[in-house]
Image (cartoon, rainbow, N blue to C red; front, side, top):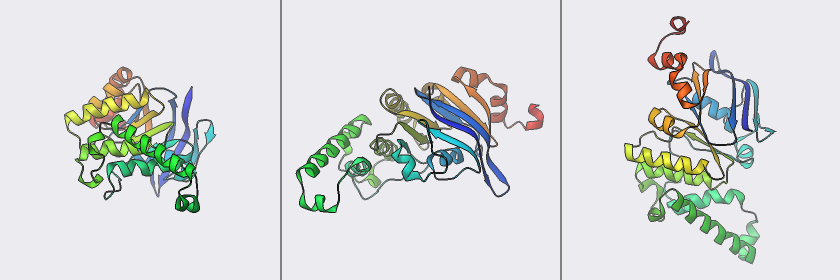
Length: 257
C-alpha cells in the first residue's frame, strides 16, 4: 500500500528546474530515504510535499487525499510533519515546553475555557504533559526536560526537534538531514530512534547524506540527481546501480551514456 504518492512533480525557480518530473511512491511501512549529491533537488522535493513550495506541475497525494499546493498547516493537520536542515526550536523554552507546543496541534478549547480552567481543560493539559514526558523518554531526553532548548548539545537538539514533530501525531514524518552535525555515537542513536519511530505509528521519509546511516536504516531508497529520479529500490540494489555510482563520483550525463 502507498502512503504518499508523487506523480510527475516539477518545480522550477526561474530557469532552474530543481525537481524534474519526479514520480515516487512511499509505502505504508518502514523507512524511505531520498539521497543524491548536493543540488539534486532533495530539499525542494520535501518543500513541495510539505506545502512550503507549490509544484509547477504534478500531484502530491497523501493518505488518498490530494494535498497538492495546500499550505503547510493544512498538510500538517492531515498527519504529515517535518524537521528542517537547520534546527528550528523555541530556544528560550525548555525541552518539555517545546514538546508541549507540538502537542497543542490536537488540543481544543477557546480562551474562555483556558481562563476558567474548566475540568476538561485541566484534563487535557494533564494528557499533554504526560505525552510530552513520554516523547522525551522515547528519544532519550528525560533528564533534559527542564533545560532550555538553546542550551542543549546539538545532537540532543536534533532529537528534541524529532520529538516535537512526533507530538503532532504524524502518519508520516519527514526528516531533512537529521544526522547533519552529529558525531558517530549520536548518529547511531539517531538510527535507532528512526527505526523505533517506523516500527510504531508513524512512517519515516528522510533526506540524508550519511550513507552509513541510510544503508543501515532505510528499507527503500530514492535517488535524485539534477532534479531527476535516477534510481529507486532496496539499499543493496541502489548501492550497485551504475547511475548512482556515476552521480556520486561526479560523472557527467554524457559520460554516463
